[in-house]
Image 1 (tube, helix red, strand yellow):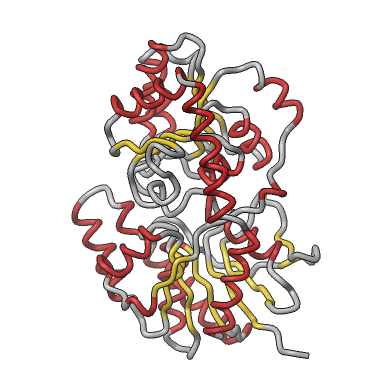
Image 2 (image 1 turned 30 degrees about the vertical axis):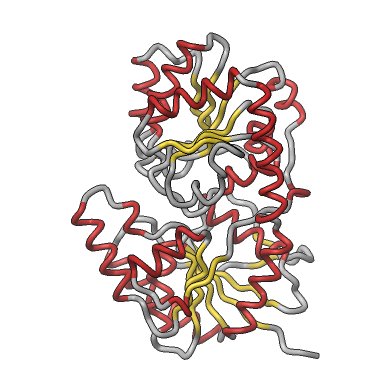
Length: 376
């Protein structure tokens, strides 16, 4: 029997990164790949399981989202010992913190690190100094054993043109989902079917820039007396939630806009499925799963023209792109689509076609296994 390839994932299990990893471990061929994971201690989260339902017990390290020199150093040291113990054939690091810890720890081993940024860390910087600092860290950690698995062509371009990776070490593996796993909450569906609304999925944070969306929705609400806005995902990390609630109240939109907590995925998908439009005001993205889900569910979108978003939407064919921060343009595009059923249906059909062509999980997993085999 051919030896399985041992893959060790290193990540902070939250948000889109969590969706990505769970889809991999729950669907990848166990006869070829043996999966291990190092992440933060899991609290109030479903267990991790393989495609055959076998539970994966994670190795835990304090892999915090924010920079913490003491904890980060401890995480690196502990990961070094775990790599020595687990002896993986290849390491797959996800997101900024997982990427930093895994690449430093791997220096002591002859192991390839497949690094999926899910949006490079410097894109999250709120000022030029932080951006410069985060970019320097990314440049320093262009180790000889690092291979980039970018989630989009935009992320690939960032890796090559900004961070400075060799083209031969950068590959695109676009995020994907299994449409058959899209669920629905039937009780919620009954409630939502009678509503006219638009929705977005994202924690109130600098990245998601919900201030822009709330400003845009104020104009939309003045034009359309029935439309509602659902903002879904104020969960583990929502630093701007209070600010966003205050904005909604100040504009007298408390009966027209609702910020929901992080709800189960089938409920998120039910909100998307019954929406007139999916909207995103993000400053940056990797490749957002919520937009991919909207495409699979034939929902057109109005998104900011940023990395990740622009890789998913064909302008004026499956949705509209507006510049980040231009809430007036976003409001106008939303109003346009809400008022034009024919155009909305045309965009919906094209969105579904793009999903079928580019974002099916079976194709994603086949390509991922090839990378694991090549670099193990």
